[in-house]
Image 1: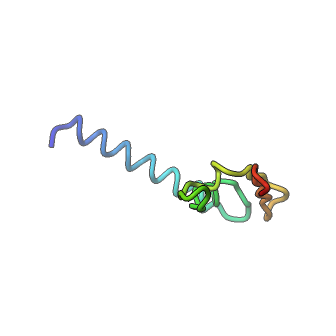
Image 2: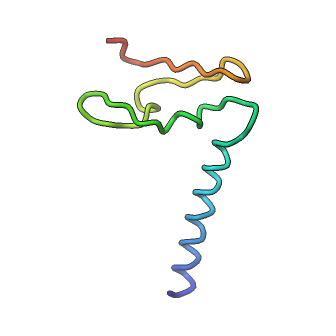
Amino acid sequence: MDIDNFQLDLEKCIEALKEDLIQIRTGRATPELVEDILVEAYDTQSPIKNYATINVSDARSLVISPWDKS
């Protein structure tokens, strides 16, 4: 393994760690907690963020508003 491949792998690990740390922030609800949950729509599974708006209503609550109400 050369140094360039090692550096690329290390950067990927750091980015994954950052994403994980965002999701475990305590005491506050954030859209990042649920935005990657897979939902089935139109016979395919995609993250919920593709089908709805996710907003913080207060420190402990999220509001998920689907774009297609049918």
